Amino acid sequence: MKYLDKAPDHDKKMELIKTLRAVTDGKIHTELERARLTRILAQIREKEGNIIEAAELMQEVQVETYGSMDKEEKVDYILEQVRLCLDKGDFVRGTIVSKKITPKTFEKDQLQDLKVRYYNLMIRIYTEKDEYLNIANSYYSIFQTPQVQDDSARWMPLLQNVVVYLVLSPHDNHQNDFLVRLVEEKKLELMKPYKVLLTYFKTMELMRWSSLQELYKTELSQHEVFKGDRGVKRWEDLHNRVIQHNIRVIAKYYTCIRMVRLAQLLELDDEATEKHLCDMVVNGVLWCRIDRLEGVATFAPKEDPNDVLNSWSSNISQLLGKVEKMCHLIHKENMIAGAAK
Image (cartoon, rainbow, N blue to C red; front, side, top):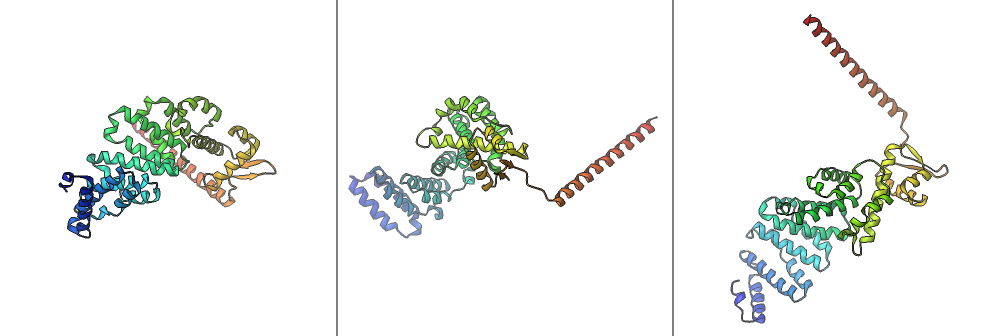
């Protein structure tokens, strides 16, 4: 290996690498040297502009099975394989290779640089599929890295990305739990507009899209998430998240509502309102039935009489239990007062 740098010219060096790779092929005791030679050859091909060949060379090596390679070098090698796959546009293979590494790998502090590289690559994969919640989680993992926490110039844009991608994520239990935890982040106090934006989505109150645009149009338009080819789509996604939030709020406080009034509250026309309702019902976010003849949307399913009776019986039992406990406490206080006299 040390003689490669002493090769008189490029052709001799390439010939030596090919010879060494041929000699070490299929030999377990030289698998580490062959892997390193392959990486050197891939770097040369990449510098020549041949990304596809470089990626194919790296894919031949299954370093996760090598016992002679230490953990840090092994993770670094796999990350290089993932990067080359993404650079050549093969996101499917890049995703498969990335699964050879788990987040638990980066629990030790000495692997923090590799952790940042890993999550940056995962962000590229998730961005290709617009998986907003996974992107937010990846940025948050980088944000929690000790070396990032000490540098405000690094953690501030990361935390902004976490907030933006989180509010762009469709609502579910994981998203809601993440949102509640993120609002408590102390560093958000230095980024008031972003904390207020999170609070809007956390609070079960209606948001007016027109007012939200006035407040955040300038702030968010300058953010990298809303720039480029996908900027328009992400504005549409943000609008959809506001609509879905408002529908959940209305479903919580109304058992039924006229479609005309619902459209006014959502700042939409009747057709768009019905479409959003149907999408949320199909996705299992809420229960709703629309009576088109009457123009009424019902959010509370009709309860079975037996269920109503059982619920009433359970409530009465709990009430009687509390009354009985209160009587015991009063009797106890009377006895203590009598003994004191």
